[in-house]
Each structure stands twice: as C-alpha cells, then as structure tokens.
Amino acid sequence: MVDREKAKQLASEFAVEYEQLVNAVSWGVDKRQLLSIIAQYAAAGRSFSAKEFLQLSDHLKANSGWFSGLKGSFNYSVTALLITGFDDPYKGFEDMQKSYQLLIETGFRKTMFTYIAAITLIATVEAGEERKKVAVQAKEIYEKMKKHHYFLTSHDDYPLSILLAQQDQSELIEKIESYYTELSKGPFRKGNDLQLLSHILAQSASHARERSVERAIRWFEAFHSSGLKVKGLHYPLIGLLVLIDSPENLMGELLVLTEAFNQEKLFKWYKDMGLLIAGQIIVRQKTTEDTAASTSFAVSIEALLQAQQAAMTAAISAGAAAAAASAE
Image 1 (cartoon, rainbow, N blue to C red):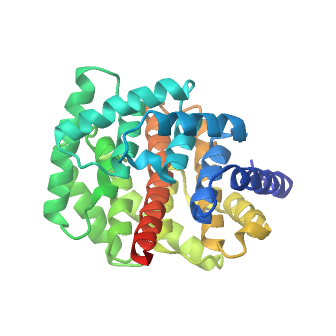
Image 2 (image 1 turned 90 degrees about the horizontal axis):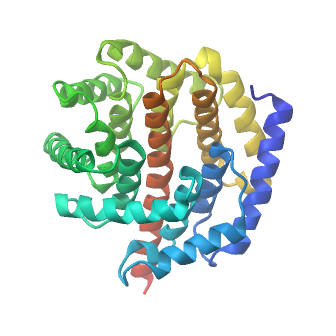
C-alpha cells in the first residue's frame, strides 16, 4: 500500500538517484531517457549504483560492433534493463547478443527495438529450439500486423510481437483488431499508441475481451476526472493497469504517488512522466503482491513493463539522434 508518507519517500529517493545518474553519464542525454532509466530501478525496487551501472555500460560498448546501437546513449537504457532484470547482467548481455542474432537471422531488422525484443525473448522463453520457434512466430505476427496497419506498424512493435507469439494464435489478429476498433470509438484516439494498447490487452483471456475494453475506458475516464491529462504515451500504461485491477481499487494510490513525483523539482517540465512512472511502480508492486497470480502472468507483466519502458527510451534516443543528424 502506497500512502502519502511512502509516496514522498519514493519520490525523494527517485530524485536523489536521478542526480546520481545525471552525474555519471555523458552530457547531453535526454532527461526523459534518464527519468525512464531510474524508473526501471524504482519499479524493480532496486537502488541505483553509479559504479555498477558504468562498469556494465562500458562492458556493453567494449563488446559491441562499431555500428551497434549500444555505442550510443541507448546503451544506458539496455544497461538498466540488464541490471534490473537479471541476477547476472553480464550473462544476460551474452544471452541478449545471441537472441539478437537469432532475431536478425529470422528476418528482424537491426534496430534498437530488436535489442529490446531479444531481452523479452530470453526473459520469457527457455533457451533452445523453443526460442527459435517463438522468433519465427513473432516475425509472422509482425508481418500480419503490418498488413492490417501498414503505417502504424513499425520496429517499436518488435518486443510485443515476441509476447504475442506465445499466445493462442487462432484468433490473435482478430482479437487485436477488435480491441483497436472498439477503443477507437472513444475516448481513445487512433494511432500507434492505441495499437500498442491493443497488443497489451491481447495478453488477456479471449473471454475477457468485453470486460477489458470497458475497464480501459473506465481507467481513461478516471484519469480525466482526476485532472490528469491523458496522452498517447499513457495508453500502454492503461493497458497494464487493465490487466492488474480496476481504477476503483488502484486510483487512490496512483494519484498519491503521481502527486508526490510531480512535486519534485525535476518533474516540473515532465508532468506526463510523473504519471507514467508512478503507474509503472504501482503495476510492478501489485503484480509482486498478488500471490494468486500465476508465474507466467507475472513474467508477462514484467516483460510488458520492460518493453514499454525501453521502447519509450529507444524512441527518445532515436529522436535525439535524428535531431543531432539534422543539425549537422
């Protein structure tokens, strides 16, 4: 349970660790990416160590090709994912490299999102032939998604295609389309963010489709009625919250934690990030507390959280790189 005292403590610790990260990394890294990195630590209940972080970051750079995306600022996001997601992050990096190569051989393009997909693959599928099978299935699903929404489907859909490949395939695309169509009737806007929300909701059981749509709308309206501005970047969070519980049970804690974050000076210009990070912490906490939840469900939620966090920072990194290139 997150009360006001606990929320204030979490927000204060977050601000301290954020400053430690700022002092540790290269100048010029987008603040939103750094916020997302500390959010990974906060959601995982891990304390940030600059020494541990920089050692692994340097290891990634030293063991990556000249043109690898791990040479740039995206390296920091992957470093955080490995530290917070694996008992042995160095072994996790080795496995990620192997799975990345497997995905490339399967037909995925060499992008930052492919690294995230590789992490999702090793986190949710046992090593061996099963990973190859899931990789092939994921590529087929990605191509089907692209066929239905050519302009919306892009490399940032790679990580979720790995999770979708592990679902019952008989009605998968139809289920995703159903969510997209129903939610686009209101209050959600059509676009890539809504497609991502539809992919997340597709993790729920087929018989729960109507309930999931109704709960997603209630979450949107609960945000709005509480004075929170809902942007496209919040759609995936709504999907995660739908899978966890109803707004009637979680909104109080979420508001308290969001308010605590937004009162910190570093969130002055990033209020939308305050809601996003608070939501991720609540989702992780509730999944951990729910003893009735299956192990596979907990793993899926964990993978969804990682995919959402890392995909957002990958998008920020890609945008920063494009801006730098255009300025040259």
